[in-house]
Image (cartoon, rainbow, N blue to C red):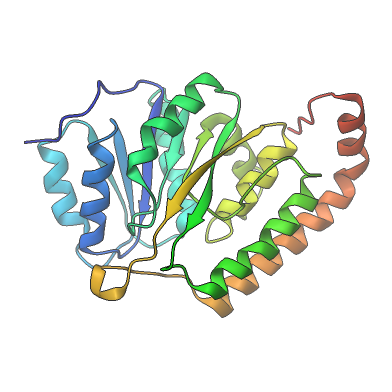
Length: 262
């Protein structure tokens, strides 16, 4: 039997990109479905067989949809694929969450309620770490947050990397369609910077994050060398563009005009 959840929303859905997270994916989806409908999963070219039981689950649960991409394209690309299909289906907002068990499904209703009260805003998770968090990653994200604060002229983004958040779909598709980046691990940070440039205000909400051990089913595709190079290149690009935008952003900030950028 499918889980008992509130009536399906016609505007807000949960969107979960997934790549080779094994049995943890099913646990994540079950927890999300227990708290929201609909839930969509974009399986990004997984080779671990995790899509098969998920499709079987969707066969008996009308609140779950599974989209399977033939090859791995990256988190941002998987999210964009889901966003475009969601927009075509009439949805206006998407809560993104990771498939690896780090994000708190219990908070889905609260984040969705915040978004429904302020549909023009983005609702961003502000991570609350426990002892499972790798110290190197906790300290490293402070650097990214410092750059994000500068690039957005202090727009109020509390954390640039935590992917548990609700986006308005139309502006996010618009910023992604205009450039080829944001398709991999650079997605989360660049999304909030570019949305802030468009005048999408952040609402920050505390949300716990848990790093599962390998024996608990934890899977991480983050690679310190590769992905830190990617983040460095991302902030370099954003800073160059920020310098070009700075006069307009500063003028709009001083005059109180919305800093919308097409």
